[in-house]
Length: 96
Image 1 (cartoon, one colour):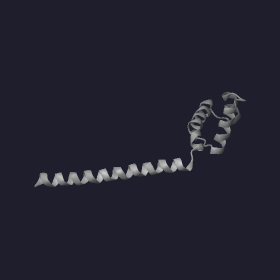
Image 2 (cartoon, one colour):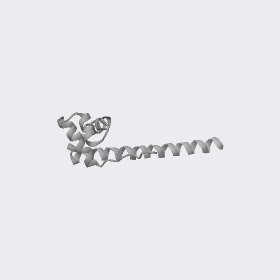
Image 3 (spheres, helix red, strand yellow):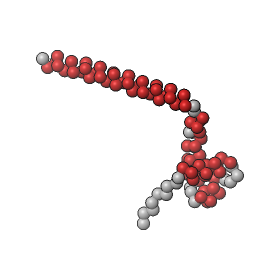
Image 4 (spheres, one colour):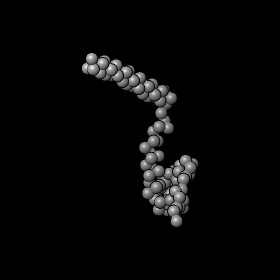
């Protein structure tokens, strides 16, 4: 018989991670309490800590990063267009 994967909501993951960070219980005890493998708790904890700084980003920082990425995309599209024109020109002159 095939077991299906369990899916956990963000609220449950957050609750487990915050309990793990409080260190009132060991990872093994938490794993038994929530019926989750200890490695899964460690993975959620690492992911939570990796993205914790994003919570404190200001709206200005996000706008600047988004604007920068849009400028980069526009620049790359211009370069692609230029290369396409050059490629077409060279193909036309080689075939003539």
